[in-house]
Image (cartoon, rainbow, N blue to C red; front, top):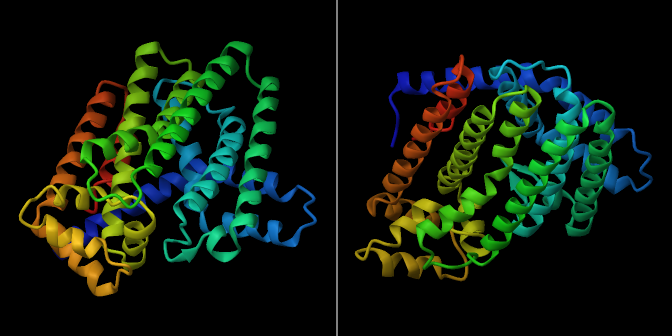
Length: 336
C-alpha cells in the first residue's frame, strides 16, 4: 500500500491547507477556551494539570468545531460576529464528552501521546470531563445575552437532539465490544449516530447565518457524512497502529475493515482465532492487518468511505463557493 512520492507530496500539501484553515478559523475560539478553563480557581493540582494537559494534546480538535460553524455560517452569507461566542461552550461540552469517551474506550494514548486517562487515572479524568461539561453548559446559558430568542431556541433544540443521539451511539457501541460477529451495517449505524455532533456544528452555523431551511438541511447532511468519514478514517489509521489495534481487539469495537474481513468465509476461522487470543502481540496485529487486506476488508471499507464522500460533496455542490467544504472531504480520504 505504499504510495508514490508525488502522492505523498499531494497528501502533505492537502493536510497543510486544512491545518492552515483550522488555524485561521479556530485560533480565536481556542484562546477563549483556554481562558475559560484556566480562569477557574481549582485548588486540586491534579485536576488543573489534567485540564492543562488536555489543552496541550487536543489543540487540533479544539480548532475543528469553530471552523465548521464559521464555514457553514459563511457559505449561507451570514456574519461571523457571534461564531466564537457560540463555539466556546460547544467546544467545552464536546471536550468533556471526549474525556468521558476515553474512559469508556479505555483509550490511554492518542496520536502517540497520553490522554488524560493515560497520564492521570480514571477518577481524575472523570472529574476533569465533568468540569468541562459544566463550564460549557454555564457559558451556553449566557448566550441569551448575544442571541435573539428564536436563534437560541433553534440552536439549543439542535444541541439537545445531537448530544442525545451521540450518547445513544456510544451506548450501542458498548454492546459491540469484544464481538467478532458484528454486521458491518450494524457498526455503520453506530458510526452514523456518533457523527451527529458534526452535523450539529454545520446546522448551527447555517442557523446563525440565517440560511434557508434547505441550506440548513443540506449542510447538516454534509456534516453527518463528514463526521462518519472522520470516524472511519480513524478506523483505517488504527489498523496500522499496533497499540490501538491491540486495544480495540481486547477492549473496544473492531475497526470496520476487520468486520468486513470476518465476513470472508475463507479467512474467518483463522482471523477469529487470532482475535480471541488472550494477548495481541505486534506480530498478531500485523497478521490481522495482512489478513484484512487479503480478505478485501480494507477495500470494502474504502468503498464505503468513497460513497460517503460522494454523498457529502453532492449535498454542498449547489451552494455558493463550497471549496473549503470540499477540501475537508478530500482530506478525509488521504489515507485511501
